[in-house]
Amino acid sequence: MLLYSFIWILIQPSASCNLSKCTETSSVQRYRLEGHVLIERRAETMLECAQFCNQTQECLSVNYKLLGQICELNRADVHIAPHNYLPARGYVYLDNPWPKVKMKSCASIKDIVSNAESGYYWIELWQEKKEVFCEMINFGGGWTLVASISSSNNNHLLRTEVNCLLPNRCVENVSSDIPTRKMSDKDIHAIATTEGTFRVDQVSNGFTAFFKIPIGAHLFNSECFGASCPRMIVSHSYPYQWESNCKGTELGYQITDTPNHCYRVFDMHDNGECGHNWFSSKYVTNRVLYGFPCGSFSGIYSNKQGLLFVK
Image 1 (spheres, rainbow, N blue to C red):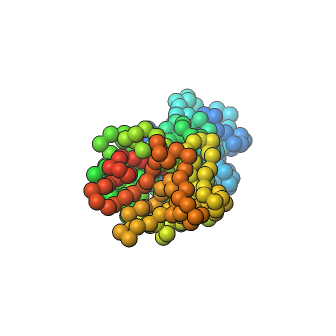
Image 2 (image 1 turned 90 degrees about the vertical axis):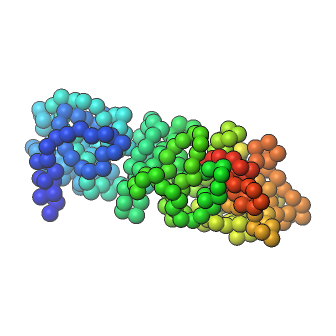
Image 3 (image 1 turned 60 degrees about the horizontal axis):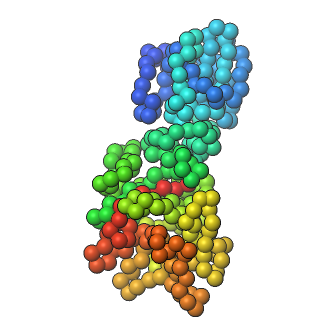
């Protein structure tokens, strides 16, 4: 079956495609992925080169040089390194349709392509391809955009997908008139596995805060309130300088609660569990309360737009 699959791929007409939207495997003549060669070896045919790739753990694509029958196995592909995909006479480029290494987040792409640019990339979640916006420059790069937060509603406080732009691209990167769009908490858990760090950009005021759940990002819950939220730590800067109350950064602090369960998901002060109220170092000027769905408040408190990234 493997042999026939590769033969089918190789006899398809060569064609270029929109790099951010190439999702099907095809061979492309006169193109090469530069700067990501893992192994170089001889192969009598393109098919043999493709089979070498399939047998190599880290191979995501191949460049085949017709003159000299040179097979280059790449540790990246056109989807995660589109800016290195360039015209090259005498070469044929081919994705590995059965890669053993799956890109599950922008952080995993950044690990392979250290100079990757910000933009939309394809990742794989639950054996499905998803197009996500990757912020590759600021705060170490490798950030996956998982939610955009409107100032006019509180729909970001749901665990489900919310108002996805497209079936395979849920959240778009916008900086004004931001709509609420959100990936499901299940998808967010799968993406937040490199550091387990949550980055909240409060777009309205132009500052950023970082939160982390010491016992694991898999406990992130968009519907949690007060004591039902996992303990957290906060940093106002990168490189991170984690802060917590008397419980320390290994355990983290518990956010406060009210009878109406107004305090949601992330905040920068605790519930007074140490005998007094604790506040983070920039609480007064740069507070981020992820949700406060009480009274007339919506979005990030109070009535602010924002973006949620994870790594």
